[in-house]
Image (cartoon, rainbow, N blue to C red; front, side, top):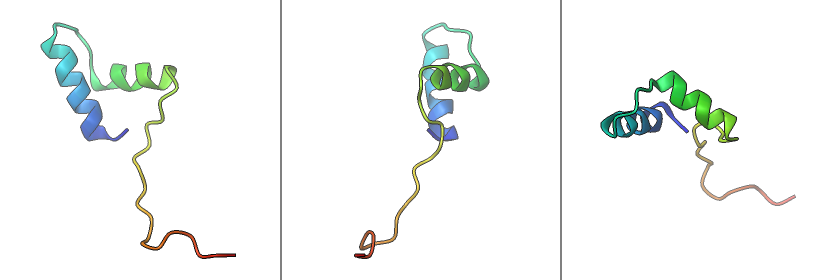
Length: 50
């Protein structure tokens, strides 16, 4: 998950009346087993054959 998504989730939770921060949302997601790393783009063509 990237920071932009964390901020969006935090804003949505606050909009529903929850008192949370970006830090709390990150911690809760990590505790649930979500990876907080952004996706990495791969070069076109994928992996070369062995």
